[in-house]
Length: 329
Length: 264
Image 1 (cartoon, rainbow over the protein chains, first blue to last red):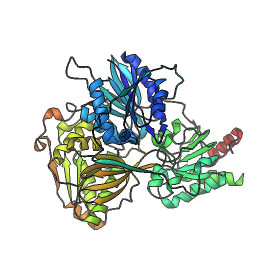
Image 2: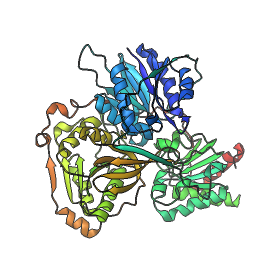
Image 3: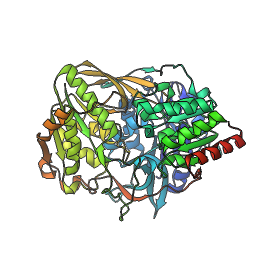
Image 4: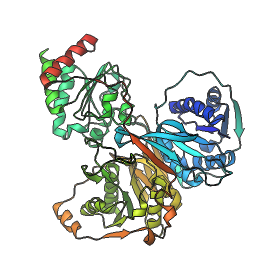
């Protein structure tokens, strides 16, 4: 009782970092719940991952099946529904990733479990678990409670998806957990949903990850024609022009210039964010930059929480002034 | 090809000041402007593109107050054939699970090839309703879709799901299915003046709890599995050093600081 299960996420032969982040937090939560931390690993030929996970969990539950080689939410849901029904962990953690978003809501609904998504923290209040998550693009946070089991002799069970990089990777004492191989409950191939292949992003002309200075533009630029003023700034400061999701979605810059979770992760010496509010998906792709400058007229924009220097003003006034002085200097 | 698109009428908060309501479980809405959720707008466009290619119909459906008529009417102005609004004061406090249940009650006897939703709502960002709805309808789903191809109408689609770091995953999925649409999948159109004029006269079907055949304990807080207890401002972390003054002055100050740091 009180166990915490963490679903291991892996893709193309690599264990994804969010797995270890969840195990770090999961260890703490399992301690508070008085249970054990268990990693759940589904896949084909994943012995090496099992060994790596064993260091970070009391037990690693492995379901080996060639049909699980690539992620498929239909098959994952089948396996996990059976496993969670049988073992009844108090809390199941899944990454809030493209996989987790495809899997967790329908799995939780099938099992009748309360689910909080994109969680960035967990708290206990009077022994009850609460999840912390962002709302309104990170401008506010919310404390969310889970429905307790209505059947008094049944222990409550919860599920949560965890934001990537919300919990830092920690150097922890190895737990030396046991690796337990479970029989695959799958009787047949996926019927309704088939994984076909991966498609890589097209390689563009410019690799923004190689530049020491990146000037990124966001929704605040408003019109395609206005992009020019930011382009001039990039030129004046000797940097490359990049963009946040809305600018790429609108087709104003090509996809290879996108900074963020679904685009590129950059760590330049200098990152200048122009008219970018700083949604978590964007921050994930740039917060490792050495020096960050943010220019945005909204003082409450989350970008100012990661920036080194901030200018709260109209970008259409600040950017030309900055460009002019850089060019003259 | 008959498509149902679930849309949400959401406050625009990207550049607005947000004020937490006194009960700390919501925000003051009176000074905010509302519009269709961004990802839902792309979902509507995808449905309209299919209609142009294959024929058939587009139905938009929303769970929301009377103000949400504005959002569904705009969808009709762009070419959606009909609109349904689900509203009842007893829906108040519904979480994603309860919202999916409300939508399920309205859709379960309807004929469709695909149900589309946006990948997530810009206000609460749960990203749950689409896949839960699929589970309740007993049909497959794919989340975070950035490209679609109908292989065989009513039977099979091939979709690209957006993964992290620019990678896509190609998946074949049986129809009917629920697809949650990511922004950027297409270029959403604007409604024409004529379209807007026509849409003002169109009817929006309204259903409440009793029409849907749901019980009071299946919706609202009673029918939910999670509860928003309290909203609060993010804890102040290490905030940026804010430079103040007219543009010329802050520019000079910033350049000085960056030079001192040796980054330019």
